[in-house]
Structures are given as structure tokens and as C-alpha cells.
Length: 315
Image (cartoon, rainbow, N blue to C red; front, side, top):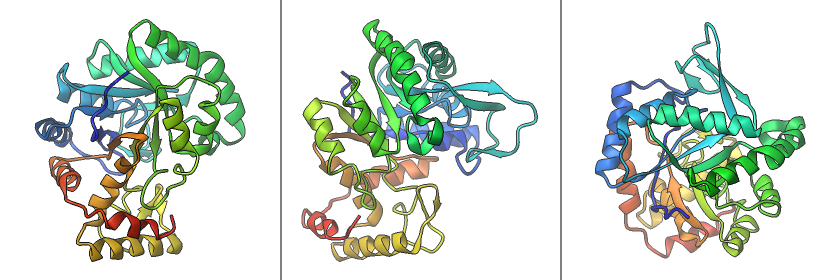
């Protein structure tokens, strides 16, 4: 089993999520993370359709003192004349992600990722975006393909030593509760479902993971940015403009943090790690400046009295 550090780096932004960044900015962000002691980096073929993996691989330069996780579940198919923005990624690589959880696709996806990352092996392999929220009417079909084909292939990769640990990387609780009853997972990467604003993983999923020894990595601790800065109109929550109700709750959280002289982003970053089931939190970072902000938030002193006060605000 992989011994995860408490703080890691998510790399969707290195794939030009929502806005394009330069190769130099991406490399500087990874360099700043390494200089700041960050040793866990999570990525995926979907992030910029290979761009994030390429940039991360180039920036890491084959270092052996880091933990890298990537994902399977999509294959990248070449496209001609791609539009500037696709699936939220701007000026990305000329590929289209196609869902495929078959055994062959798992192996092909991993080999392609290894080439982009310039690595011989991966520490952690996640199956990406299983679930009703992503697949809608095709959820059962995709889930069956994963359980029957993709998951056994991932287990063989772990048993053969090509990866150290396997799991799922998702942003919904229901599929996690389903799968931990049916298959053996080492980890779950859960985005946005255990935060100051959304604690839907708290009641059932996190206790179940503790009971089964499944480690949880929390992505999206800022819920698409609403908790990353002072609350303002137009803030995003879960990849869309926040509703009035969400904005109201966020302002309540900010006011509570202000009472305890704690920044809202620092509280948002540190909150998930208070649960014994959470091994690591991996906020996205797109620049050296964002890395510096993250490290400062992670180290910021937070009064123990803040947490029960925050808990009184419904999530």
C-alpha cells in the first residue's frame, strides 16, 4: 500500500482547465511544489487530453522520490480541427476522450500514460468517472464493463507489481458505496463530496472506508473555486455558477472563519484532513503563486474552536 503524504497536487489545471497556461507556467508550478516538499501528484489522460500528463512528466524528469497517480477509463482518439474549448479544457491536445472500461483499454491507457509521463511505472491507478452522474442511462452498462473487465485488469497490474495500488476516482458518493461492497479497492479519490460546503461523504462512505481500510484522497476541496477566495457573485460551485442557496451557505462559512481569524481557503483545505478516513487532500494548482498560497494555507494555524462552529452551518 502507498503511504500518501497529507498534501498533494492535482494537475487538471496543467491541462488548461478553463484557461490556457504556458508550458513554462506549468513547469514552474511543479517545480515550486517540489521545492515546497509536495511529493504526490495526481493526473489523468482526460486533463487536456494528454497535456497535463505530458507537462507533469517533463517537469518531474523521472524523479523516483515522488508518488504519481493517473487514471484509466477513457482512451484518447485523434480528431481533426478540434474546437478551442472542449469538456472545459482550452487549447488542449487534438484528441477526443472516449469512455472504455474494458481490460484492453485499461492496459492501452496505462501504456499511453507511462509514455506521456516518461515513467516506467505508476504508483496508483484509478478508474476515472464511474457513476450515474457521468454516464446517465449508460451507467449500468459502463459499471458492468468495469467490474467484469477493467477492474480485473487493474488487479492483475497490482498483483504483477506494475502499480502499487488501485482504486476509483469519482465525484459522487453513491457509486463508491456500491463498489466497496462488490470489489476490493485500496483507495478512493473523491472530488468535492467532503468539503466545508458538501459533506455528503460523511455519514456513510467515510465510516465504511475506515472499516474496510480503504484510504480516501479528497480532490476539489474548494468546490470549483467558491472556497478558494472571498465569496463573490458569479463564484463557481461544482463546475457551474453557484446558486443563491450555496452562496448564502458559503458566506456563512466565511463569516464564521472571520470570527476565528482564519481564512476561508485555509479552513477549506484543512477541513477534510480532520477525518481519520482521509489520507490526503489534492487541490489543483496552476502556477508557482498558487502553490505558495496552498502551502501557506496548509500551514496556517486554525483554532480547534472553529470546527464545531463550522459544523453548525448546514452543508
